[in-house]
Image (tube, rainbow, N blue to C red; front, side):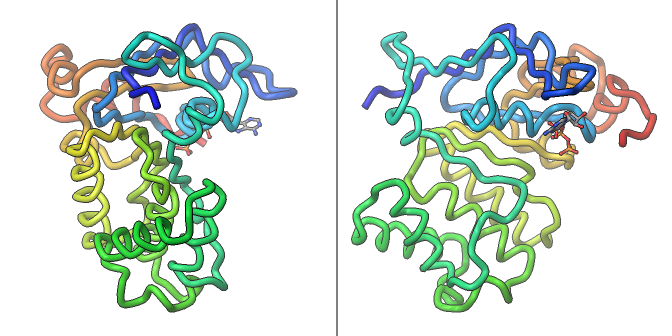
Length: 250
Ligand SMILES: Nc1ncnc2c1ncn2[C@@H]1O[C@H](COP(=O)(O)OP(=O)(O)OP(=O)(O)O)[C@@H](O)[C@H]1O
């Protein structure tokens, strides 16, 4: 399998059916493999739309996304599906099943062998502090536990590019800490992490690179430290307000 070198997003536009304006407009971004990349913006900015297009769940209206190998070839089809992991904002799991049963189910969808699924599940549940509840129904779990199960499901097939839509929303400090620590560990093992968040402190600490979008357009992009220096801001929260304004978004 080819190793991913970068993701190139060029002249990307998205307008939903019957919408009167673009949800994404003229997006041009290159994401280098191995980065921790933040996709930030206020409510309705277009973050979920962008992640959905990047993962292939949604079609762009024009322009596109290319996953390129080290040899400069485009990675497509099954080869691409196997290297992408997606952790959605909503809980994508079966409440009546245990974490282990959920992982067995989703692992099978990736055509993983049962013994490989089992080994990987035991490892993930252990790392994410879920081994003691591996045989309990997910429906009774706390928000933080469900988020950790969501994460384990999204990466059961050991993807090298991991998309996460608000992975730390609505969880306690302990789960948030465990999730971020685990994402850092995955990144150290060369996984590319692309995530959205509303937590500016967390994003500032976590991301090497980020893009800030507002009303479907890129308003800033670059290495986190460079962006702050260029705009003369001390932290991402202030830069965010400076670039996107203070009015409410619906
Ligand atoms: N299925 C859809 N049909 C029509 N418009 C949509 C659809 N999904 C999203 N939109 C619109 O596209 C824009 C971008 O939405 P999107 O959900 O991508 O933003 P977001 O940055 O992820 O927001 P949030 O932070 O609230 O999750 C919004 O104006 C939204 O109303």
